[in-house]
Picture: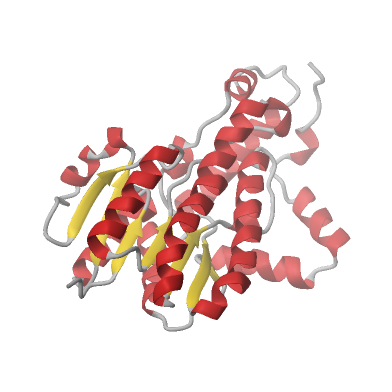
Length: 293
């Protein structure tokens, strides 16, 4: 008989996911399914994490339907379903809207929105049958506000936020808890790993192009914030652990101090003033738009 709650964590081999995996292992009270892209599974070994009786490492590209279905079927058959689902896997395109093609837009949405919602759909029948369960979606302050060069990423997180809020109402009658954890800036090298689209990459390297200063100054600006913010993957992971252990977590948990600040500004500042202040707070905004090339 399975006495340990089953936790499924996606994107567990790096960053926030890896810190969270380590903390869950230390708690030693869960049966863990830790996933990463098949090409990234070796990161677990480098982090000292191996398969054990209660730790199950699985290759999972969340955008592949057959891989999602096979994993949930395995968990359902062996352990009667997932108790806690943590949708953490995701990635970011950093490009202005004009430099994102439809195919790239779909890849962003598939990873950050469609895949988490499909994993939820696959886990819900067992949760409803047991009348218990917890679904934690790792969102972002970008799901509440948008920044230049981050539009398609923000769109994917806005979609995740909206669907998760709807889900909160839908599954509450079965005592299933739903929570969004939304970090802001995290002190890491994560921003250096953010992808530009091919067109964005080309034009960000040419100082004569229309959006050159958008890329240059936003990259420098965000890079500085991420280097100096006190928030880390570990501090955000601690907040996720609190959500896992809480009997009745709130729908939204702000993962970092700046996420709290941005949420308060948006809530209490008049809309026109809010956008005016943020626009003129953008780095070297007077240089933007100097070229139409």
